[in-house]
Image 1 (cartoon, rainbow, N blue to C red):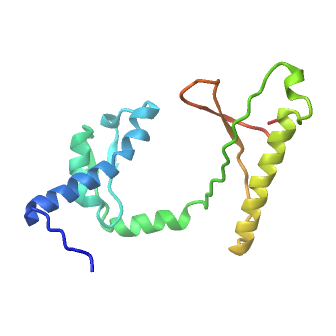
Image 2 (image 1 turned 90 degrees about the vertical axis):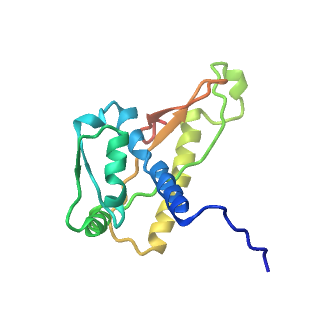
Image 3 (image 1 turned 30 degrees about the horizontal axis):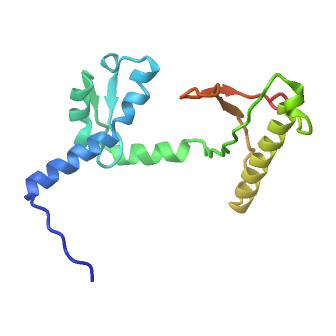
Length: 166
């Protein structure tokens, strides 16, 4: 049996730690607001989910959001959102390709557009197989994109890719 480890926290300290941890997980709100150019102070925060109302005021205060709305049944609102939302699955593959202007470097290899099309088709085939296994009856919609960067660049730019054109 594993040896027990006891924390040197009382119940109140432990509970405060849980709240601090859960607040960090809510920090995704900043990525869908501030990082996209929205000022949270211009919006109301709507709490949903079974525990949404427990943290909404503290989160709103941290982000200077002036208004908090807590629906009568926040858990039901969360469940309804899942019920009516689209099914979305992301399929991706990391490929490190050096695309050079010099045609002699690409000798014996397919052009980038042909290679990209082949990779996209593999991902789409995987999606079709998975949805068939789940007995999905709806239509599938694909959105292709590429994360591109220059050699040595520390971040990628996500750009849409059109079928047949890479």
